[in-house]
Image 1: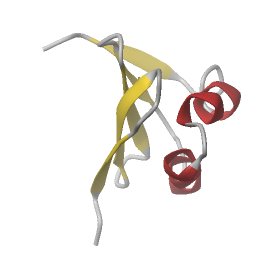
Image 2: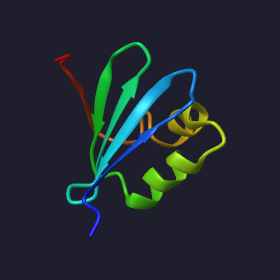
Image 3: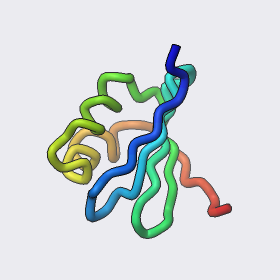
Image 4: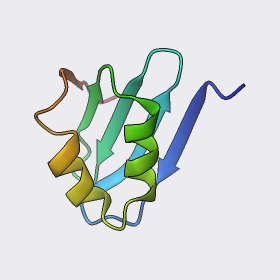
Length: 75
């Protein structure tokens, strides 16, 4: 059973995403180095993001401002 999945994108804004299927949490690392954690994101939304022609556009239209989030501190 898949618990976590990581996707690296060729996006101008998003470096990679990490999805946790046990908590429905999506972590998005932007090219700027900022990382945000979005809560209660369905697996379908994550899959649609991963398969989108433009991950940045999909993120802006479907995730940003639609889910509770925290900005994570840099390691």
